[in-house]
Amino acid sequence: MVSEGLTKLIGHQIANLQRIIALESEGAPVEIEAFAFHEQPEEAVHGQKQNAPAVLKRHQPDLPAMYRQVEPRLEMISHLLWHVGRCGTFEAGGQPVRIESFRLKDLAFWARYPSPHLLDNLGELSSWCSSDCVFCFLRGAPMIAWRRPMLSVREAQTRARYYAPAKQRGLPTPMAVPGEPLANPNAIELLRIARETNPDTALDLTTNGDFLSEKMVDALATLKPLHISLSLNSSNPERRRRVMQSPRAERGIHAAGLLRSRGIQFTGSIVPSPDEPLDDVAETMRYLDSYHPIQIRLLLPGYTRYNADEAQFDTDAFWRALVDLADQIRPELSSPILIQPSFYWNRTIMAYIDGIIPNSPAAHAGLQFGDLITKINDQVVISRAEAVHFVQELQDDGPWTVSVEIMRGEERWAVTLSNELDRDEDLYPYKPKGYAPSYSALARWGFGIQLSDGFDLGALERIKKIVERHPRAARVLLFTTPLVKDLYAQALQIVGDAPECRLPNVEVRVTMAQHNFWGGNIVIGDLHVVQDYIDQIRLVQRSGYRPDLVLIPSTFANAWGMDLLGHSYAEIERRTGTTVELIPLQRIMV
Image (cartoon, rainbow, N blue to C red; front, top):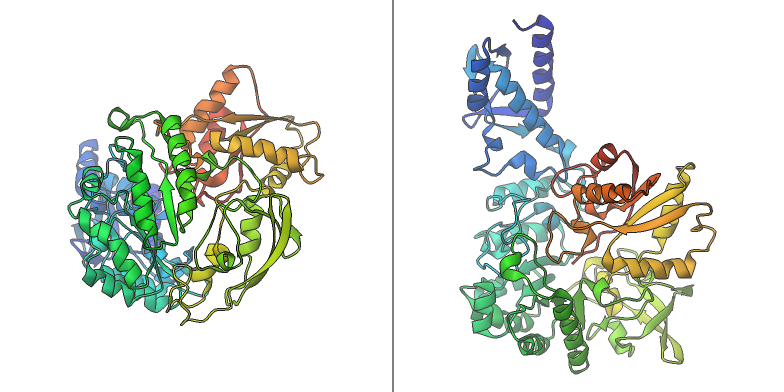
């Protein structure tokens, strides 16, 4: 017998839920008026099968879970409905009904999530890809995101209606498997909706090129300003077909020329295959350079434990060979080469220029790869991260001017860089004709100065402030990664004794967590999961070291403190018995 109090409690829960969501049965909204508990346990099991919302069934996209990373309360609501459905029967109009899904009421209330522009807020246009690349990160891996249906025009219009460009806020965006966006048959219409909402924002699109026919590129040209990331990988049709399993290898290769002829800014990216000759990488870079991309992105290949048998290679040997190749070919190319992850090859904290974008203010001022930035607007620059911050610390409406002091060998001089441009000026690829000199179209390229990711010196000050909140913490365990460890040591040598960074009477021990979830040759700290940190802390504790405080970079977690599997960082503290704090840092974008 179920108590009257429990019945009332469930009734209140359902009533409160229906204030914020509309429940649906057989595709139609229903208003739940009553709830009847099952009398026998067997009925509860039956209820679980009959009343579980269809959105929770694994053969379909788990819609609430797709929002877990940005709005976990939706998943919480779904779980609540599922558990209530196990216990009894929902009733509407005096008849039992099966709750299959729900919709949010008052969408204006939920339009509060940061998105720099509407296209970002739309999420993946498609989770389907026409290629099956041998180097795909998700190849063989467990599903950590869901394949969403093709984004519909109706959903895009709804998101546009509730998106506030001035505040850069919109509806929560689902986490979905990235696919080929132009595979969506409504891709151009979707991009047009984004363009209408953000007239001068450069729309970023990553594509494998399979759909970049002349007709498609002509349509894209009407939506400028655009920045296309073209995943070329090889300029040899046979090799591209072999590496990417691309059904339209030649089309992707020809796309570089089409984008250039239509004045569309693009980046050419290459993920080299260890099974293909390095000469192919060099020829692909030369091919891309002939069409003047804004940069050539060389992505050092990775593999996980899920595809290690077929993809494993000597990581350090192959990565080093790729870096050496880039160094050899760089002088003959006009396009800058961006190697990622940059921390692998760029082992200094200082603000050396990694490349200069052709036709940019920096190029016209004669700046070169390898120049050292020492001052920006009379502010002394110590690190690459500081240089990026100072260059991009601009007003949104422009125009922008910046003074940069440069050191080349023993020579030191200053230049003034200006973005006082107009829409009709053609400075391809830096600013193609028709691109408004907007913040998104110009400022992110830093006057044409390419600076890879750098160690944030401000992290040392933030570490000190966190430790000071724990006056009894004498032993601090600090997590870093193999790529950042040396940069952290350099930062300590440069500013570690500054009053705002010094930690007297505190022992700081640095450690690195293994990538036990992903395995393989993954070294990016942003891809750690909660269990990785738990495993390492327990290993340290078993060795006899008992930290009073554990500090972990925040970038592995989302705004809710959850990793990509949906586990909260609070589990680390609960399961290891050690106080844990996250160090606020910017995520490395690869």
